[in-house]
Structure formats: structure tokens, C-alpha cells
Image (cartoon, rainbow, N blue to C red):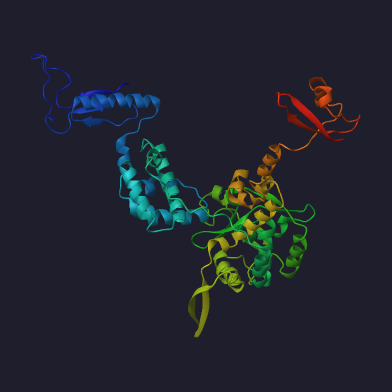
Amino acid sequence: MAGYIEDRWLKKRPDTRTGKRERTARYGVGQRYRVKGIRGVQDRSFDTSEDAKQWLATATTDTKRGEFVDPRDGEISLTDYIVDHWWPSRTDEPSTEGPMRSRIWNHIIPLLGDLPLRDIDASALRSFTAALLTRVETTTAEVIWGHLSSILASAVDDQRLLRNPIKAHRSVKPPRRTEKKAKAWTRSVVDAVRFHLQDRYKFAVDLGLGLGLRQGEAFGLAEEDFDFEAGVVHIRRQLRWDIKGRPYFCLPKGGKTREVPLPRNLLPRARSHFRRFPPTSCTLPWRNPEPPANALEARQRKPITVRLVLTSSHGNRIYYRTWNDRSWKPALATAGLIKAVGEKVRTDGGRIRRRPLYAAPREDMFHVLRHTYASVQLEAGESVVSLSKWLGHSTPKVTLDHYAHFMPGAGHRGLLAMDAWLDQDRRRIVPEKSPAAEWIKKMIPNQQVSGLAAPGATMNVKYKETARGGLAVNIIEC
């Protein structure tokens, strides 16, 4: 049924005696004209017939195109949309869900939550950015901005907004983190940090450096992942923790399992570590530590058992925060890379325990070993495609974006090649039976050619333009 306009102040049919339309009980009350009859579109009232006609035409056209967005749906506040519609539909990994929820509830909702979706314009976004940068660093602000963009994009898909205001306004600039090149350690730094770690954790450095593993992948690596005969290590899981501190196993980042070549000299270190610190069986749920609510979740979260090669001194799986604070950072400090910034005092059974606190920069945490692995590979001339596969990147472009500065001679090899190409004085070697030699015999007078090479020999020729525009060819050597 096509849309139409209803006059709410007058009856539809005229009086049979007077021929005029009589007034309704609503006469003079509220908006007079109502647009009705557009399939899938809520009725809407207007004060003037011109406004009603214009809206009817626009709504009808947009509905046929599948592009109609009722502005009234955008009256919902950003907070209500997030809490009631956007967040319940998310299916993130528990380790991702916790930090994301914290950033949204602590920053987006307090700064923009009271605004209706349709009122989030360029001015509101610029004010949000300015306020956000007073609360967090640019690195975190960039992540939060990404969350907001995802929320507004979903509002567009839900037909609560016509377009994403972040994409629609040129004056709106997202916060940008300061570009930092990936940092790699030298051999001496790696050796110093490894030396100062406890013996059972030295192998963690070998895994990060020799295989390019992320920290969660190293802590989730099992004895059965090592294929010594084939010379590869299977990266099939990582050890993660949710916001409540509950451990679980899941696929590596991006859901990408991979095989990484096992360096020959890493093999004896692995065997030695397995002998001194036997792998320990560990059973944890898969993907999510929450108790399953149905049979499908029970299958998806079914616990798996593996023999972890890295465990704590008590034989348990490693909690990354405890390991960072009590093993990694003290090793960095002893190696002279960082210094203590404070002290934590705790009373335990009448005894006072003091532990230094360290603030290690992000670039000196475990991930630096992965960067060092990439730098060693690229400096050796390894293919970017192969390295991308071993690192588990989605595309080689990601690898280049992160590690192009590790490639030796980048920008210089092409320059040297072009210099050689443009070298006007380089000697040309022309064999006697080559087309060039035949061309010389036909086009150049005999007296200008000092000689041709014997059959099977080569001839070095130097070309020179004559005063009359001709070409003289001199044989330099045969």
C-alpha cells in the first residue's frame, strides 16, 4: 500500500447535506497532518501539509531503495544503545572482552553516553577527542576511538543512523599514536637478560627469540608441539586469562595456527630443558572459562589437556602478570635496562616483606624477542612472505609495515643499480656474431672501425658521436 496523508482535524468524508468535512474531536489539538501507510515505516505527524508531503516523498523513495532511516530511531541515547543492543550481540574472546568493556564503560559512556545517537555530530566528536586525550595516552585513545567507530557503524546497520558521523565529517580526526619502529635487542642484551632469569625460565627467551612466539603462545606451548624429526614446531594454541583471572586455552591471535622451522641449535636447548624441567600436564577449558550453559557451549568449551613446557616453580601454568613482575622485570633491572621506581611492602605472618617495583617500557617486554627474531631473519635476507607465515601475520604487508626498517640496504640497492644503468662510460662487450657487430659493419665506414673480435671472442667497444652527427666506434680491447 502506498503512503498517504491524513488530516486529523477533519473527518475523511464530507457531510451529505452540507458537502463539507466536519471537525473531529482532535481539532486544534496537536499536529494536524499524519503520514501513514508506508510499509515498515512508523507513522509520523507534521504541522503543515507541505512538510508532510515532503517527508512522504522522501520516505517512499528511500524505502524503495532500502535506504530509509527513521530519525526517531536515533533518539535512543548512546548508553542505552550500547547496553541494550550493541554489547549483548558481541562474541569476543574473554581476554578481549574485559579490556574492551573497561574502555567503553570508563571513557565512551561517561563522555558521550547521554547524547542521543542522532546528536553525535562533528562538534561532539571533536569535544570527545579533546576530553579523551586528557584521560589516556594516545595509544589507548586510538583503541577507544576504534570502539566508538564500531558502535556507530553498528547503529547505521541497525538503521538508527543514516551514516556514521565519524566517516561523514572531514573535520573529525581520530587520535593517532606516535609512530614507533619495532625495537630489536642486540645479542649481548639478549644474553644478559637470559642469564639473569631463573633457570627454568631461560627457555622462554629461546622460544621468543628462536621461534618468534608471542608470550601467550610460549606459555601455551606443549611438548607434543615439537616435531624434532621434521624440524618444525606447531603453534596451535595460546594460554590466556580472562578479566576475572581465570586461565583457558584458545587459538593463536587471529585464529591462525602455523608451523615454524626449528633452528638446529635450539633443538639441544629444548631437550635439555625437557630433561631438567619435565613438561607438566595441564587441563584447561577451550576458548572460554565460563561454565557452559548448553550442550553446544559444552562441546565448544570442552577442556583439553597438554603437557606445558613452561611452568612455574610449583608446576603450574604461568600467570603472565606475576611472571612479568617477579621474573622478567627483575632480570631487566639486573641487566641494567630498567631501574626500580618504588617498593611494595607486605606483612606476612608478622614478617615484613619488601619487593621492588619496576616500570618497564612496553618495548622491553617479552614481545621484543619476537621483534628480534624478525630482525635476524630479514638481515639474513629471508623472504618476507616466509617470515610473515612464520610470525602468523594475516598478510606480508603487515610484516613489512612492522619490520621494513630491519631490511638491510633498503633504498640503497636500487640507487646503486640506477647509478650503474646511467653510467655513460661503462664498456660494452659486443661479440663478433652478435646483431650489434653486423650493424656496425653496415652502418659505420670501415676506416672508423679499428677491428672486430675473432669468432668466439668478445670485443669491448666505445661509441662516440662525431662532429657531423655520425657515430664512431672504437675497439677498446678484445
